[in-house]
Length: 181
Ligand code: PRP
Image 1 (cartoon, rainbow, N blue to C red):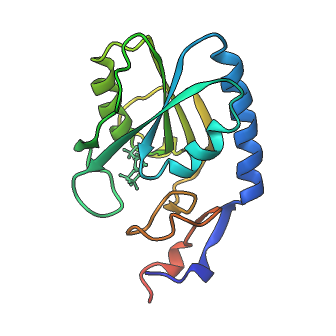
Image 2: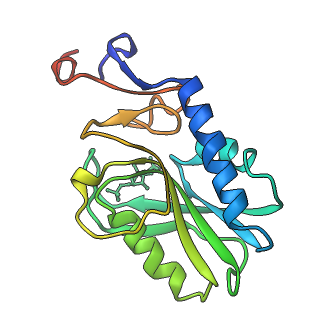
């Protein structure tokens, strides 16, 4: 595993916080008078959920959805299973899925198909990072923090072999530092 010292910072703690403040204000405005459930897609979205929910100035419900992609490595397989389901029904509620990153879109496609069968009033998508260059299926992102180039990013919830999730910023290892060590 590469050394954290070779990490390039993509978005600092301060930049992330400022962007989330704006996203929170937009969500607050758009969901006024509605019953909103924030569904945090585990594990990577947990810091984003924690910061975003405090930037939303209205009452919201919080739910967690555990999903796991079959297959190891850094590439999505598209085969997803639910490892921890929502604790409450979402029928007739407004759901906003909270993701750390949308890459191929395969994970969200599966989640959307699954949750739609439960008849919510609406399902929106809020992702901190969007990597449209890698998209394999179409998903409509409603709120996006940053559109990123094709880096394998870590930190602020995102991992490399389960490490680095607790970094307060988002970074990536330059290609020349990978494969060493
Ligand atoms: C990451 C991320 C998204 C998914 C995006 O989860 O949190 O759920 O990949 O990739 P996709 O658009 O190509 O499907 P991961 O499977 O790494 O699990 P984790 O959140 O537990 O780290």
